[in-house]
Image (cartoon, rainbow, N blue to C red; front, top):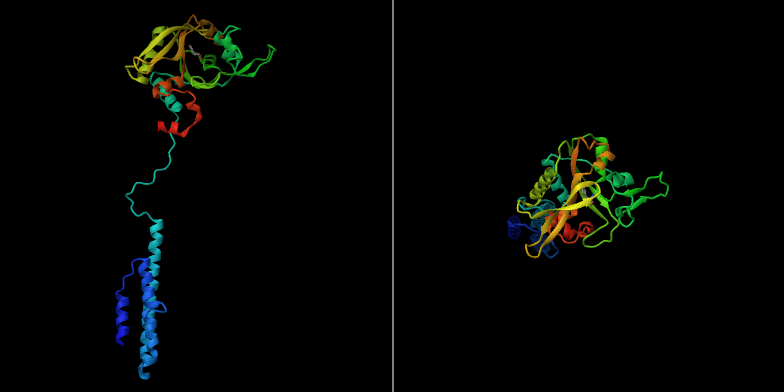
Length: 335
Ligand code: DAH
């Protein structure tokens, strides 16, 4: 064999093609118009006639070798390229984090409250958000001219002068669920009733036209104020820790007698302040009568807690509006 052909054949066999640059160099060196194999074809004219056939044959074989080598290397490069794109290089790498949602602080607070009351033996009940005047006011012993019935506070869904057509309101508190519960279930009752309530109030850092309450009702024989206090104190200690600073104050509600409010100290010892979290009391006998429970046999306590207030104290939030604006930067703090 012509020594030049033999030399190029050796070069081709020794050539390593491990990337696309080397593939291109290979093509330029051996297969292009100016490549070494084409150069040898040019020598054809200088070859003595009797050797031409053999020279041409080995040259064609060389060219085929170069082409096959190139084709195979190209195929190999192509498949590594695609695997590099589609497969995972390093399966031990952590994956790109998926965007995850977070639990709304009110939902979180409510879940914690439910867990605590579940431990204290309360079950969960609910009632409608559109209420009639009887359940929202009358059965709860609101006198006919009580200011809370005033349009200032109440969103009326239907208000008719005809006394035969009952007013419908967006419930202004969860207390009407107490009545609904007693209407359909005989004591003993030990339930919490979480839900939304609505009041026609100007929006400010402290108030919003809707908020959430957790109502409670405990009705049985011999239920006392001591039971009420014990339940409330146990709740705040479980919610905020045993060093929580609280106070119970006498208050007034038409549907309880006596009535108490509970405050929690918010902030530092010197610059903090009391924040009211709930109203409560012993169920007024008139309420029992309206709901069909005999006050001679049963007594009970009730409360209505503000969920936003509980959450504000838990998470140090100072503007109630942030609960409803759904600003992702706020919500993501509660993962
Ligand atoms: N319903 C009252 C309110 O929204 C809160 C309340 C006070 C509920 C005393 C009660 C209670 O059950 O006993 O302001």
